[in-house]
Length: 273
Image 1 (cartoon, one colour):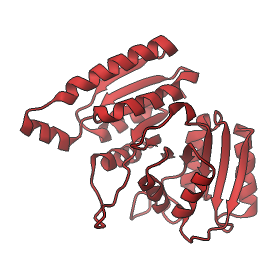
Image 2 (cartoon, helix red, strand yellow; image 1 turned 90 degrees about the horizontal axis):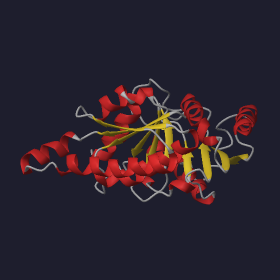
Image 3 (tube, helix red, strand yellow; image 1 turned 120 degrees about the vertical axis):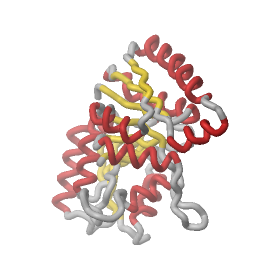
Image 4 (cartoon, rainbow, N blue to C red; image 1 turned 180 degrees about the horizontal axis):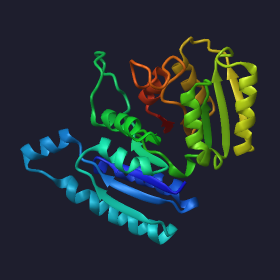
């Protein structure tokens, strides 16, 4: 891993996202690009109120963090301001990076069932769909960067999306203390395919182990969340789309299982388009 992008819409996300990027970059000496990507709705509100405090606060946060990163780890960092939004940032910078570290949206559906259109939702969707690269989604709750690779769960359903996420995550899976390949439902993939992915995971991580679970819930998302908690996972790796939503298909761009884990909002997720 040689280059990581951290798009920041505001200062409230900065601490968690920058610390995660620093932890992931330090072993390989990767460059970290930090981009201020203002949200159009925030800009409109600031124009009405005459406020632009974020434009002043974020550079100060970055400077303090960059000095500490250079002093402790000798990492190269770069600051960018991209007024054209996260889509442009993800396309112009993200496609030339190995990983994007972004904020997860948290809950996407309000109590009355109306799907939200929050900054967080637009941010992670746009970063995923515009970059074509791996995106690590950090929940709003504080994440311990040092424990991020303690127990990594790879959610495997045999789909092309899961395979792409696996390929993008390999540098991190090799560093994981424990790696668990989890298949929900014994009929999801055949025995030969299960053995193949298990053997491949062991090539990258000696502590890789396969978990094949019956899906008593009949809901893959809920079963996966139960497994994540049982394994005390610190990071989950999964595809954007499941087997029922192959890449390029019409309909929803994000699979229901991924949305379920995102909405739970308690664990970082690494995924890729």
